[in-house]
Amino acid sequence: MFKHRLLRGRALSLEALRLRLAGPDALVSHALLGLGTGLAAGLVIVAFRIAVEGTQGLMLPEHGENYEALAPLWRFLLPLLGAVLIGLLFLRFAKGVYVLGVARVLERMEYHQGHMTLRGFLLQFLGAAIAIVSGHSVGREGPHVYLGAASGSLVGRWLSLPNNSIRTMVACGTAAGIAASFNTPLAGVIFALEVLALEYSITGFIPIILAAVSANALSIWLFGSAPTFDVPSFLLISLSDLLPVLVLGLFAGAVSAAYIQLLQSIAKAGKRLAFFTRVMLAGLAAGAFGVLVPEVMGLGYDSLDDLLTQPLPWTLLLVLLVAKLLATSTSVGLGIPGGTIGPALFMGATLGHLTGIMAVTLIGSDPTHASFYALLGMGAMMGASLQAPLAALTAVVELTHSPGVIMPGMLTIIVAGLTSKQLFKKDSLFVTVLKANGLDYRANPVVAMLRRSGVASAMNPRFARHEAQLSRAEARRIMGDHPDWIIVDHDGKPAFLMPGIAIATYLSQDDGAETIDLLEIPAERLELTSVHLQATLQEALDILKREGAEAVYVARPIAPGINHIYGVLTRGRIESAYQY
Image (cartoon, rainbow, N blue to C red; front, side, top):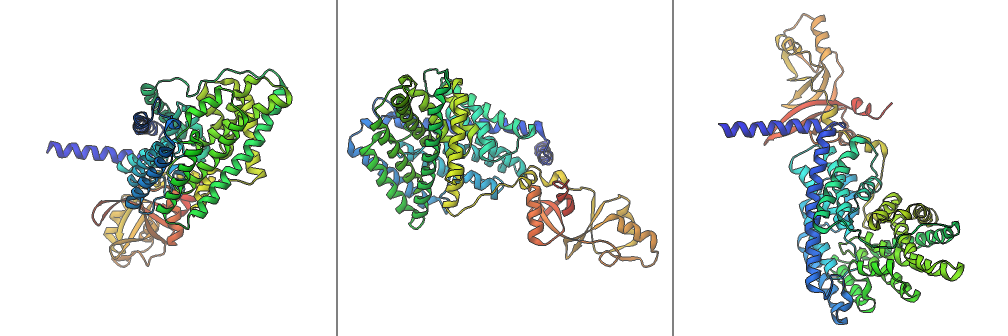
């Protein structure tokens, strides 16, 4: 008996939490969810990094990025073997889930209220780990974002929380993914804002900030707080130094447009092939690049560190830029489940280093500034390819602890973004990946507002329910509770909604028959359909449009074939949420 009461008490507490979270202003509850999501996502990402870096450390000599030390035959076979494993994994378990990473997070947020699956989570974890370890030219940041977002979504779905809360938890996981990837908590928050097209509000962003902080704390605890890249400090002392910065922005915008176009073309061409064939082609291409230019294999952080700290010949830089561009576009475009942000940083650093050499040759700049231009190039390439300028700028500052990059970084990132978007008419890398795979993405501010609130926050719980036929005494008993609405059943199911005042008016004006037919008395009657308690206002409005109804009753199954009705919601009440 005690156990039964305890379980019932927990169920009632969870039910109260669900109803409270449906409102857009449940700040404390959402803040606690953000904190928990950040910890869960942080644990997953730490596990991913330990799995990948531990395997690389055991497999590669000297350090975990030293693919250059492998024999040419192994540099060719390793990506090919990785492609075989990825192909077999997805053939056996994918069941149509082939697009992962940040692009999939956008698609699930736009069309599925942030609901993500355990299948996708496992495919991303295993597929990305295999891709990185086997030397494919991909990044870890995209997989980290997906794993963080999926962690939040799966916890929210397990608790049957309202969809507006699940969407918040996905955004929290997204920020946590970036924060734990590079020790960049602020970049994680801004990335969630820009890439997921979220509207800034205190209620919306306190949970995201807490998620980024908690995930970053876990990462610091295990991996330390030192900057990912150690670069010399730099201060801009002459306005003449801004000329190379402007030129770098133009170059980065053009290269990012080429990156997006190449990935899009390869993805569209690859759609005509079976998935296993595509990844095998990706494995062959990655093996060929591994033999010719081993610096582009894997994450390439060791090569990126050299680009930021050592003077390199322009011929090598040009080869690295072209090879990384082709290798990453081929791998990701043909379906390897890796990220695109890390390679963009690599290409940006290479391009910036080249620009620094040009500045030394043409205008006599200080040769030691090459690392500074490489740093700016990282931000410019990331900002232009992702169409996320603030996230790119913040990431570069946090990655290197170099505040001197802020002002010139703003200039070069904006020039690069304008060049890619306006001159070359390119969408962000993530939207391009979605469209190349036959999916679409749209951002509508009205829809976004409706998604922030669950149906429980706007429903009217003052209702009564009855069959169409009832006695005068039953009608008086119902009106004794003063309901605002009456749900009229037909064949045992809710069919119409009518104002309670209509029955009260009828009772006061007519003292005839003892039997009342609710479908015959003078009253406004709205066609009724159902919506789940978990749904957002946007989902309710979509259901009304699809069903041609004018009102919904908010319900949740409590047993097979039995629904508990919580309240009713009219089209007018939903529309009042966004109409002035």
